[in-house]
Length: 592
Image (cartoon, rainbow, N blue to C red; front, side, top):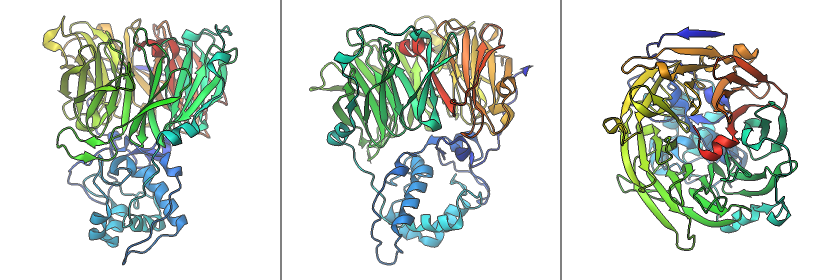
């Protein structure tokens, strides 16, 4: 169904604390908000409250149960294993791997033992007005599990294993040596219009032809692939799973296959390759959530060459943080540098890869809780969200310095890579949506042609509803697409809003067209969620995943960008929980 809507008033959405379980992605409480509410109610009432990614791969780590101090009841190894799993899946994203606090409060034994078992049991059961979920009354945890967790928090924190060079090299395997690989492309695939599609719960990616819509291959990878990134040459596809496993796929082979693998830690999200002229395909870099570090690898073999820890002082209060996670990583087009977001310490590092033995890092103080972001249309400026602090940070990658920190007015931006459009009056702007609000914000990106609007939010207007994860456009498109993946309303989460850029008027909320992709695709059963639009090479089609439960039907819907009509619905039993899609041409060139 396609309907046209006038811009709607912003709305407060009701969501379930179990949304993380429905999505299966590990969403947890994002930040503690001081509000006066009934402690027995569900405190994850808005999409942003179930957002911060948890450490779900760490839940599989086996850690010996510690002894209990006097007066504290010990847990059996089985109980301790269960408590660790619950903690890493549901709590560590906010409270930290070592329970030192992150976006949530610290839960170290010196604090928890003072509070005592009864308090902790009640707190876990009922939640708090400050934003703690009510795990007991919501039904997410049984009383037996709450008892185990209350005892667990009285014990010393589990310390997952470190992952240094020796451990990393043990996991490194070159399946096909560079000298044994093709010297030219051996297949007839249109590689530039190929899509790498994450099949999250299957631990696979699907390679789908952008012209024929044929699934050319399904390749086993790590658990829950987070992103796919192309080497600068377009030959190698790098994918990284949440389990920190990196797979390097050679697209020149007659049947593209994994030629090298490595595990860079226990939990990870980001991978990138060198793109600066003269350094194409030379290096790859992967960042970890645990241990807090990143590693620079050989771009042809994934051999680990240099590990850099991110532990250190938070930029503002200059206090030590033991586990600053590595979020987005991009490659600079202006310098031989990687751009690395260090989440908890609020620092962006520009890592010069020309001399790994004498590594030069430019560290820029910005704002805490850096997450994702992308480049402006000139590829000079990196715009990234410090989402839990409601800020957008702008880095001048040519000059290697901070350009701006822009306040989003209390909203929580989640741009993905963002979207670059030419507004009829504001000129070049970059768009982001927000997690707990239905609005889309446009920030000016032209400091030379529109200096008075540069790095300012020039427009903010409503879309479908809160819970958006991604916005999308293409240089050849006149449309801006906005999903609402985390919205609890099935009709909204299965739809996308489409804005006509040329019809945008300064100071007015633009109308948008709603595409109910679930209805258009004929998906029945479950709650399929539309997520992460991605354009084909020519920019005349946009693909959306309909992400359903693993035992339900999912699909990919291809929309004609000119007519907004469905061109193709890709359904296949192999499309298990499809999420991110990455077109080779667009990913290789940072086209968005």
